[in-house]
Image (cartoon, rainbow, N blue to C red; front, side, top):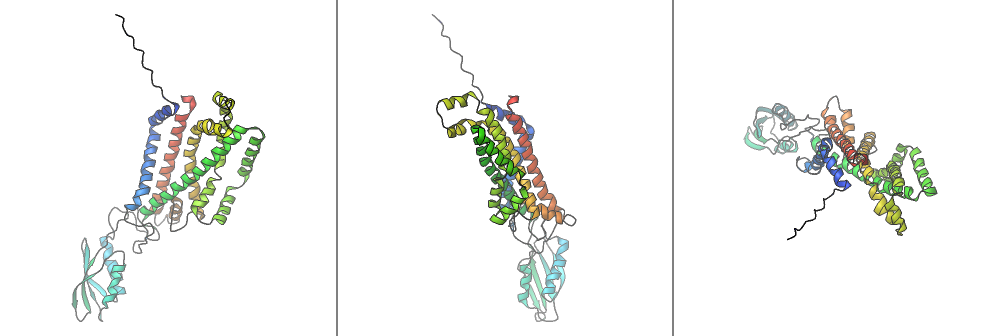
Length: 373
């Protein structure tokens, strides 16, 4: 009886993209950067909904208060705040007793106190609607129980009394959105332009790349001023146009890759089979240039964010009441002596994001480098 020999099962191979992913996951700095970017994005998306402060809410009683984990108002500041409101009521506050949830006091005046003026307590950011406990001496002496409005400002407030934590997270939305939006525009234009120039070659390639050289020679800030004049202060339109300028480096990178790819056997076979130029670009050329393109994208996003910060610092970027990290850093730089937290927190978020993007770019470069395969 003959034995049946089973053929060995084929060994499952790994694609180049799977191999690159494995190498990327082994890079601890790149993985940590991915986690930081994910947490940063999540915080900017849902964080403003959990802070309890609208980004444009002005607290007139909390202008430039420092960052604190404790709630405001502080116990030692309540008597002075009560005295200020009492002066507006045309009375004198005495017997002030501060508790956790409220303050009890007595208002005295030489004339009957107009109870309608007690609304000043409710209009403040520190107190609620007062309750009259006693009305003595024909209205010249009132005993009040005033609730305290507790507010928490983890990052402090800015020069206008707005919560800095909420504004930092909202600014992160704007800065990250601008970076991704402008990078997406540069990606589409640069890849299409560079792949077309490199594949067609000859005079077409020479003409297209001379256009790129001419655009390189023009001052960038001149373009920015023109864009502000034509598009106004709408940051979406402006940075779409900025992305339309940042594609120049992308086009050169893709062109160089295309010049080597178009000589490969699979491209020559596709040409022999009659595949159209557009089909070859879509199916063979552009997909094989994605490695360097992805690396450059991770480096272009922080470049766009820094550009936005620079323009906002000059007053050409995002305008109030919307904000960005560049706007907050500009405001913080002007107030660094009296309110350093206004600069420290937004700058920390920006620096952490830029470091994470650069470490991720380095990790992708090492993972996608064909010489390391």
